[in-house]
Image 1 (cartoon, rainbow, N blue to C red):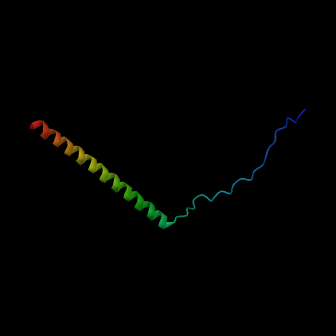
Image 2 (cartoon, rainbow, N blue to C red; image 1 turned 30 degrees about the horizontal axis):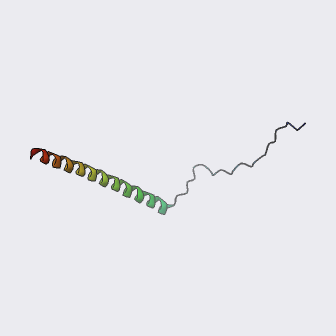
Image 3 (cartoon, one colour; image 1 turned 60 degrees about the horizontal axis):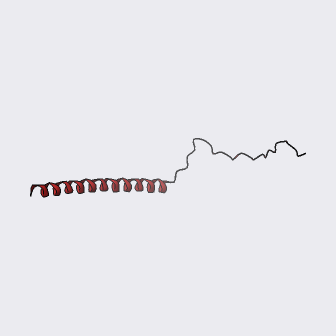
Length: 67
């Protein structure tokens, strides 16, 4: 019958970077920081907008009830 032995393929390990050495691209770092800041600002704006809209709706509703 057939050969029941296990076939094993040896793959060379990937070369690993030296620990402790970090390559920083300052333009990317600044770009990421600006994107985070912009995202946070947009989220805060949306939150304020939603709160104002809800507040307006509530006061409009109250004025309709009082009439």
